[in-house]
Each structure stands twice: as structure tokens, then as C-alpha cells.
Length: 358
Image (cartoon, rainbow, N blue to C red; front, side, top):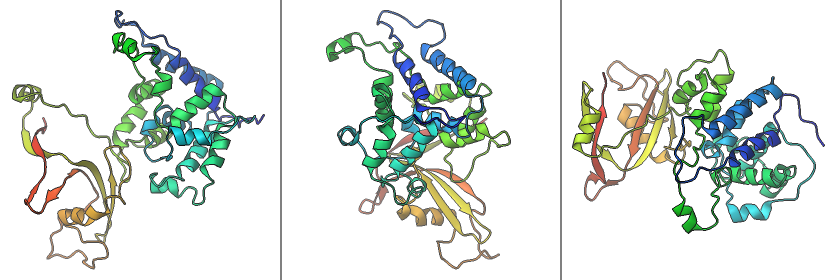
């Protein structure tokens, strides 16, 4: 059996966390939630404490890997192009090799390079990846049945079916005994609070809203809690108004309120980097924080026009007789909507109220 490098956490140790969460007894329908510490939070806290005892000098990057594996749905830059049936065809027999989290992370990145839906930065990590079968063979060969089940759900981007399983075997029984308080799923925000009681990682996530970027700031004592162009910024949560009275009540303490038409389209966070020659580099993130810059190439010229910037390769240096609207780097929140040339209007809108600040 291979011996893992000191400081490298094994995947088997990580799988023990998922196993312990999945073994928490569910509350019955008649029972109510107590004020005691939530069982899921306690399991995660105990696991973090044990990790820091067993791996006092955990390798750099461990935080990022743990959170990407624990919340695979947040790992938007890596796509695997595998669903249940396809994945089942590729699974191989176990061999006797011990994986670390770093091993698993590198293999998952290599697997993601085989999918055209992964981000460009991920696809460039291995220009000539091995076949999916070869990668999966190495990835699964050291795992027992339970660990392989966890790995399968990580690849499928959803740990819930196995970490928070439904105990009933019939849908009627499941519905009759359904209890919304049966268990609280561990959220990434609660996990960050337990992992880092100083809340530095949680604060970092609000300005650099990827698990990798927040983990990088947490592990770097000199890092600044500031946004960075090219890294998505967290979108504040909104509350849907249930009527005029409800909306007015929610905004009653506001000094100023703006009202605008809210169009139903696709959310886009647009990062525009502008150099001294007014050349601009555009990066677009979708609502899921996926890099959609190339997918939205058709709107780049519209963005530049709206900001008063010259188009790419346009020879138009700054001059005193031309007033540019934007001179510095900027991050925009926008909604891309369908426009009807025939009707000369934007499709699908409704009123939105915005609290503009005390």
C-alpha cells in the first residue's frame, strides 16, 4: 500500500465525515427541533477537530479541496460529462493504493478536462488528458464500496441522496412521515464558520465568491479581503415582495427607493478591466458563477458601447475631445434579456423595488 505524503489528508478520512453525517438518525414527524447543537454541525465540528489533531501541518490547499468535495455543486469550473448510466459503465475494480485529497483533486481536474463544459482554465490544465475510463480506473481503484458511493455522488455533483438518505422504501410512507426538521443539511456558510471561527473565510466568500478563492484568502495570513477582477463577487440575497403592503413594510426604514422594471432574462456579472490605452478585457459570470465569457461573446460589443469604451482592435486612443463614460476597472450586475425587433421592445418584465440606502 502506498504511504501518503505527510500533511496530505487521505480520501478515506474525508469519507468518514460523509459516513458519519449519513448515519445521523432522523427525527420523527411528531418531534420538534430542540435548542441543542445541531447533530450535523456537531459531526462536522468533531471531524474538523480530529483533522487538526491528526494533520497538524495539513498541506496547502487542503481547505479548498475539502470544501469542493463537500459541496460539489459549488465546483462550477469543473464539469465531467458523466451521468449515472455512463458513469456506471466506466467504474473499475478496486486495487490497493491509498489516495490523498490532493490525488483525488488532481484526478477530478483531469477528468474535468475531458468535458467541453468545464471552464477554459480547467481544460488547459491537461491539454491531452487520458480517457475517462483510465482516469476513473485510477480514481476508484483504492475505494471500498461506501467510499466509491461517495465519490460517485461527488462526480454527479450531488451528495444529498447518500449523505441525507430517505429511510422509507415507499413514496407514500415517505410523504406521510415527511418532516422538514428531520435534519438540517450542512450549508457551506455554516461549514466555513466551523472550519474558521474567526469568520475570515466567510467574509472572504462575500467578496470572492468561489470556494477556492475564499480558501486561498483563509490560508494566506497576508491576504486582503478585497474583490478581484476575474473572480465572481457574491450576489446579495433578495426578498420577493408578496404585495404592495409587504414591499412597503420591508422598505419602511429606507431613505430612498428606486423602482425599475425587472426583466426575466439571464443574470450576468460582468468584470471589465481597462488599461491605460482604454483597451478592455471582459469576463462574464453566470448566476451559478460559471465563467461564461466565451458563451456570451456576442454581447461584448454591447457592453463596450454601453460603457463608452472602444471596441477591440479599434484604434481610438483617449483624447481631450472625447468623453469616455468609464475610465477605470468596473464590475457590473446585469440581466441579459431577449429583444424583439418586430415589437421593438424587451420581452417579459415586472416591477422591482430597490432599497438605496441609508
